[in-house]
Amino acid sequence: MYCLNKGKGSITIAPLVDKVLKLVEQFNWTIEASHIPGLLNTIQDSLPRLSRCGDYAIKKEILQKTLKELGIQISIDIFATRANRQCTRLEWSKEIPLLHPPISQLLKIIRKIKKERVSRAVLIVPDWPNQKWFTELREITRQKICLGE
Image (cartoon, rainbow, N blue to C red):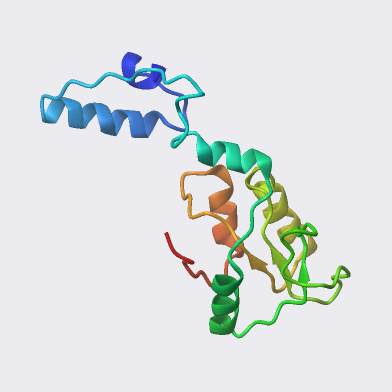
């Protein structure tokens, strides 16, 4: 809100704010950002809340189809809970792990993969190219498949 109203922004979103403000000038638009109280902001605020709660899972049929397409058989689900696990094994040395971490842990996990020189893993992440972890993700990615919208 502050970024659009004042024409300023943090370094990470400043280029986006500039683009928006250029479009506003180009088309002679008037825009105003306003605050929506948290209780009323249920749709737009749901994704950040999801990233904090961390208890979500990919649909089994989507995962199975994707793994078949990749020709990979996973045997351990590193971030599974009893309720959302996709595999039954817990020991993961010399395995192809399924990594579906909470969003807040992505950068840490990507760096661990690099540090430990994990040769193969299935890492499920949102397609958010503007996140700071995305550049490091590209460095370790061999193959990318979009699981849907």
